Image 1 (cartoon, rainbow, N blue to C red):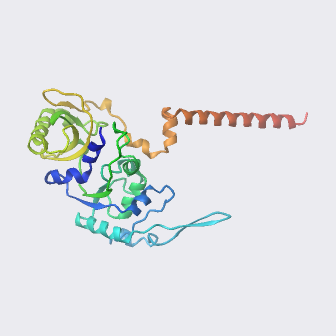
Image 2 (image 1 turned 180 degrees about the vertical axis):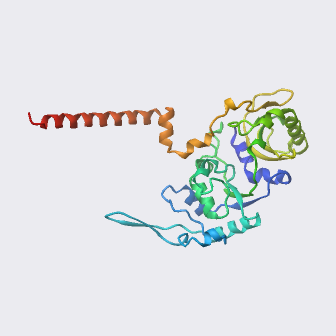
Length: 326
C-alpha cells in the first residue's frame, strides 16, 4: 500500500463521490487542541459538555462537566480538570441533532470498534461529545489514525502527506452484521467478496451466495467501477433484507488475485465460529502479549520476576526454619 492510497481512502475523499449510496454523514474539522487531548495519555477525565435534554442526563447531578474531580491520598491532593472545547462542543452537538440525535463516530479512516466495551451501552452509538471522547480516548484504532496512519505503507522513504484530521458523524443505523460484505477490487475489476463478520455463521448468507454475488456485481458495475481514485481498493457493502445495497470504502492496497468472476467466501458452519478479534482490546496489552508469546521480552521479564519471587520465598522459609527453637 502506498501513502497516496491511504490518503485517497479518507472518508472526506470518497464520501462526496458515493454520497448518494451511503449513510448520511457530516464532517467536522478536528481542532489541534482536541487532537492533543485525544493523544494525551495523562488526561483521564472525559471532556465535552452534554447539552442533551434527555431525562437520564438531567437527573444526574454529578455529571457537571465543569466540576473538578479530586483524587487524594494521605500526603497530597491532586485536582484533575477536564479540558473544555465550547465552540467545538457546540458544533458537534448541532451536527448530532441534525442527524437525528444518535450518531456513529469515526475519524478520517477508522471507527473506535475496539472500544465499544467501555461505553455504558456497549455500543458505538453516541448522542454527545462526551460519549465520542470516551470511545476515542479508549481506542487503539483512533490512536493509530492520529499517530501512525502510514505505518504499513511500502514507500516509507517518501515524506508523509499532510493530513487534516476530521470528526466524521454518521447517522445511526441499526445494521445487521450478517448483511455486511467486504469486496476486493483489482485493476477496477471485482475479484472477491467476503462475509465481513467472519466470526459468525449466517445461514442466509450461505444459502443465498449466488443472489448476493449477482447483486453486488451489479451494484459495483453501476455505481463504483471506475469512480474511485485508485484501481486497486477494498470497499464494504451492506445488503438489507429486501436485497437493497449501500456501500462504504474500507481501504486500498496490493491485491494479487485475479480471475474471471469474483470468488465468494463465507463461514459455512457453526463449527468454524471464532471469537471477535476486538475482544483482545478489553484486557491490558501486556496480558495479551504474555498469553500469545508475541513479545519475548515481556515473557523474559515475567519469568525473571517469578524466579525472584520464588527465591525470596525460599529465603523467608529458610529464615523461619532457622529461628524455630530446637
